Image 1 (tube, rainbow, N blue to C red):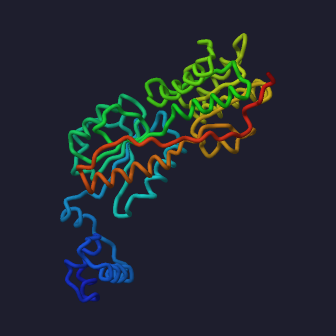
Image 2 (spheres, rainbow, N blue to C red):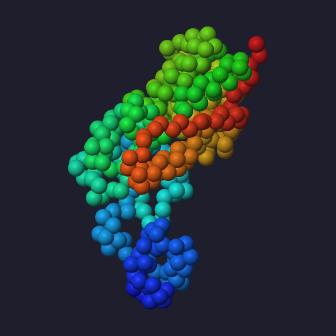
Image 3 (cartoon, rainbow, N blue to C red):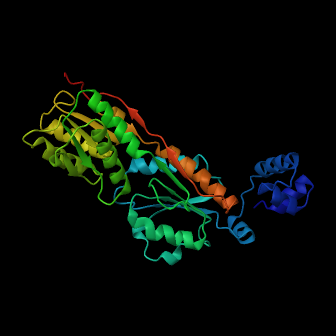
Length: 333
């Protein structure tokens, strides 16, 4: 097995210089660092992270925590999060993935285990975990959910603005009977998206029946069931906004089963712009939520905090985009 001393012999420098060069120490000249990195690659050098961790007093582990892995976290959402993180994360670091709801003892979340933590938060119930991490002093960034605490680094999408834009578009297309299949109760994203829906109704001087608001849980099954409930109303809506694309796909299937044509008989808008949304038949109009971008920016912010612990926390808002496809009909006045 090739060691730092072997590289030092070939390079004609001390093993300390090799160690510093491979760790990106700015004191080592660029030419020397490039030379050492090339020799290390030629010799197929593999770092001993256990030894490195002991010397540097680092775990070389970043923890990624979701509110829940089993509930409210779709496979496509998980993939987009990890894709964004991997755009930034140094190959020296390992990424571990956890569900906050499965943690039995918070004491296990410590600086000895994690150099940094990303919290993909969906619920206020995560606050106990978030403030535990804050007390430990581990650098961390909360993604996905708006926080009121200015002392925590926060990166979120403008869910509320994105939904308002989508409903404004529906109203311009002539829709007045607008319904919503809401997200999971207790999730901040559910609240933000409903508020965006209501903002649009208010700004356009429209009222909506309480019958047009039904609770889903972000699953395909709930989209199917709740669309059936809306279709069974004495006066069904002309357009249904689903708080995520999974529910929108369930809603589309309910319409298909009931022989209700989309968009001729009823229109549909989703949220997230998952990969399947452009391949539904017809293609789903939805709000693109840049999860990969949020994760990428959040990881950059985390690295800043790890390098400079006194970096001032801030909230970064990432814009959404309305993806107009084929599920919204234009109604005659």
